[in-house]
Image (tube, rainbow, N blue to C red; front, side, top):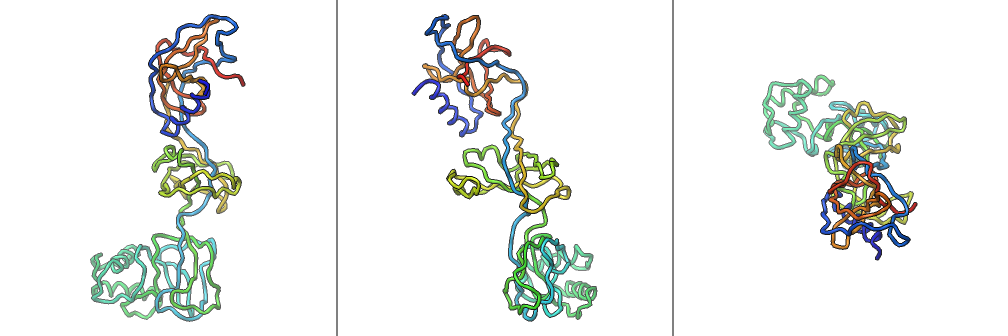
Length: 357
């Protein structure tokens, strides 16, 4: 293997390992005279000084956070008379659907509404209901896991506000829980359909806009949770955000533009700093700039200027006054096709050898 090919392979290994490792050469050959066989490079490039970043760009898709099904609640049976329309956002205490003209309303919580709650009941679902009642202004009870007479009184006030029979009990025929406000993606039934408990009604997502993209496992270091990004929307608007979710399982393929690509990849989710500013059609293509790290005021050369030195480590071929010599370097950050270097005698503007174009 030639020295040039060897360094390319070693640089690839370093890049996969994180790109920030520093490697010190153990020795370097002396000056080379100018002769036909002197080993002078075919081309040169200058050592530059400035800021070096390892930001990257990824193609992503605009969407919404999460996806789940909403089914008819236990004890809910009859004719479906209304559904929240596709694309609409349903918030706390708003209607999701109606059966026989009776609305089922959304409340926030992770526990499903699986039973009719009444005085004396205890559990996490009780706390969820009380948290929602308190958020809606129906207070006068302790928010805990016990359904007391005071809880029942608050439920009666809630029922009165919706022109319901004031029983002080409430169940899945009136309430459905979801983690937050939901956006209706599509209907699983249509008005006029007969509804049975557990029957599919709606597919919903979170109301928050997010971006998703896939990245090779070898590049996962550039998209850690919390990594700052800029997202360029279809209309050219750029909005800041951060990586909020990183998949735990890698899978190959799934790229319709390149079905032959079997590179293992993981899923990345990006959340916007201000989701209210996000405009664009669902599933629109976007560009994600991963900010990465920036090193200030460093010397750098093109990656293909690196040489693997015979004694170990890396170097660059400095060309001065018609002669070439190999100078040992320490490597820093890789980014933008360049690599940060440091070493004795290196300075801005010095020429180093690179392969011919």
